[in-house]
Length: 171
Image 1: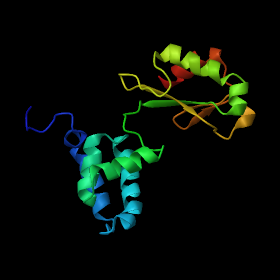
Image 2 (image 1 turned 60 degrees about the vertical axis):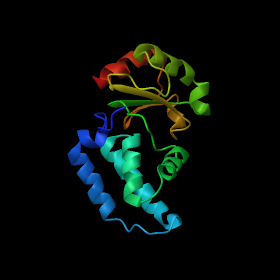
Image 3 (image 1 turned 180 degrees about the vertical axis):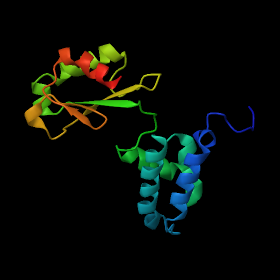
Image 4 (image 1 turned 120 degrees about the horizontal axis):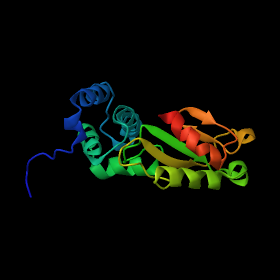
């Protein structure tokens, strides 16, 4: 096993993004007591995810060192809040609402069609990082059920037959 830095460290790959995160963290009031650090820690993780798109272990370790806390404390926050992700997301984040109204109107069929067309399962990202596929519990647009979101764009009254066209819209 080598002691050299790993080449897959995202911080080394994107020094400008790393500098942006460091500048953000350096402006925060980091307290000595852990319970007072939580707010700043969560804000830093949100900012890191905005900058890098996800929170791999190298970023978690970087944040832990900046806050002078254990890596397990950082991971505990990330794993508790569903907003945070440790996996890279695709360029197009497709989310199928699986709430009651959408499910009753066929969201399961729509989701299955996306899985078939994209050759990934719910919760996965394609290797080419073009598409991520996920489910949402409720979008709050029940009158448009079933609903699909692609990044910030909302598609309503979606049928399995419309999936191909939605994917084409992404290209």
